[in-house]
Length: 267
Image (cartoon, rainbow, N blue to C red; front, side, top):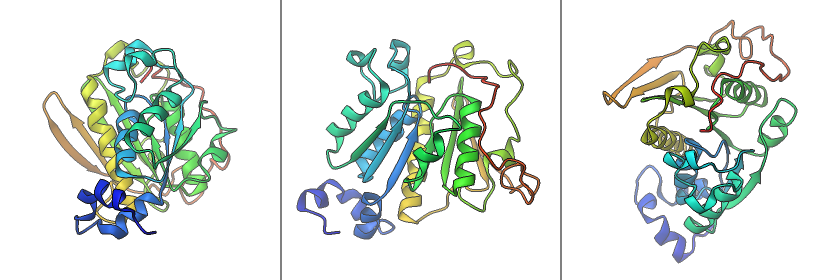
């Protein structure tokens, strides 16, 4: 790939980085990333990945923009209220970087469609807001051997980890969804808007490191932070040999939709 003069200028701050350079920027531009959920986490992630020049961005979301979303879903603006989120996000990405190819999936992911949606992408970013979707994304990525970034937020807290085939997956840490009602919804507990931006940009950084092939990913580690105290800690996790999806004798070999939606708030 020969970068144009405009691309050399646009990505100059990447190119001068020793660990990125022209070669790394070309890898980013050849990358295909799927963002599931264009809300609190997916919004900032999409903005930064588009700005970075990721060649193809897939956007998956079946929701429309709601006024309450605008407190944290920074890719959507007031005139977008009522518009499908994937189309609202697509418009902003085109303004940031018209070179980025955007593929919209105006739908939710379910057991019967997720494998087909993720199959053509190099990396999956989980920006969803409920446990059923998070476990489904994990299981699909494990079965399809797709790396992905998990992220979750509530109140002033955030957590994230990265999965690559062969390492600990989300179910290695959290075996199954909590019982219905055990965890308050975001609408009940609230969430500080900036927390979504903090975590979404962390996830975007993981994507870029993976595409470039530099740095240490959050594999076998769960990063947890509380912004009220501005306290960050990393918990080491291990691949569980008894994990129901990636263990030695997996019991989850086909995808199913969990019946325990716990956090039903718009992101």
